[in-house]
Image: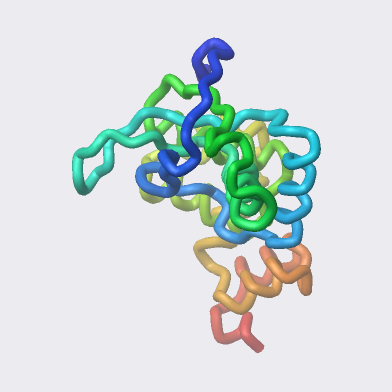
Length: 196
């Protein structure tokens, strides 16, 4: 379904890789301690999984850009290495696989990779699923197949994003409430009742 260049890898200047221009990353929160630990691992062992990038056009300037499809944590870790450990690490270049698909395919791949690895919290997953339906025109049935989850799993997260107040979302993100309990509150109560 997705072609990332038949395994063809290239080394690209890290400063030439753009993020969140056309492809809005599913992840909005990054744990800085985890990024530091990942940086230490990459510094010691090298980058095992390449970043996935694609050629794109900047929507405002029309300039050709190289945009990150998958690997936001790895990119941040490499930036951490260059800023805090070794500014010449990798001679400024990073191993990348070229994605050969549409921007829509790239955005779906970004979500799928993060959901399958369970690396994103339910608040970001819910926002991403909602965006895919409301802004990108996907159906819930389509997303169910793409992310390999049940229709209920997808529907509950879209409902949660639509109905939950910011305080309830923060409680889930901080681990104060589990997703199932928070979903029940969001599905049944108004924002004011949720806050109470």
